[in-house]
Image (cartoon, rainbow, N blue to C red):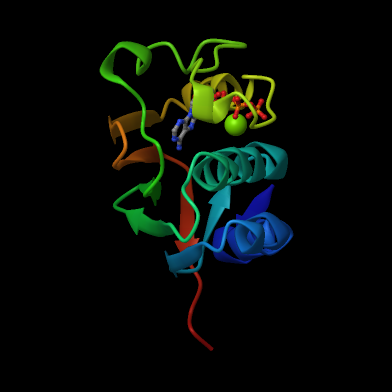
Length: 156
Ligand code: ATP
Ligand code: MG
C-alpha cells in the first residue's frame, strides 16, 4: 500500500524510546516526508531492525544519525551509530541467518541473529541496495536504497 515514510519512521523511533533512554543515546533524525508503494511491514522491519541494532550495539551516551530522503527514484535510508563496530572479517557474515558476532561485550545483548538477514531479503525483494561501512570501536553505518518512490507530499 501507500506509506508515508516519515510518519512511519517517527513511530518506530517512538517505540524504541525506552531502549534509547536506557543507553542515554542522542538520536538525530533527518527525514523528509514522501510516499512509497510497498508493504508496511517490510518498510517498518527495515527501520526497526537497523535502528534497534544501532541502539543495542552502541555505547552508553553514544549517538545515532538517521537519514530518510528521496534520491531520484529511490527511497534512501541510513542509520549511523557510534557503537562497537564490526570487524572486517565479520562484515560479510552478519547478513547470514543466525550469525551474531561472538564478542565478550555483545554476548549479553539479546538477539536471534535474524534481523539483518530479514532486512537483506526485503531489500532484494524490491531490487534495492544495501551497503555497510564499519570500523571496530568507532561505529557502523548501513544505507538502504529502494526504488519505490511514489510522489512528494506538499508541505500544507
Ligand atoms: P535480532 O536482530 O534478530 O534481534 P541480532 O541483532 O543479533 O538479533 P542482526 O540484527 O541480524 O541480529 O545482526 C547480526 C549481528 O551483527 C549482531 O548480533 C551483531 O553482532 C552485529 N551487528 C548488527 N548491527 C550492528 C551494529 N550496528 N553495530 C555493531 N554490530 C552490529
Ligand atoms: Mg538486530
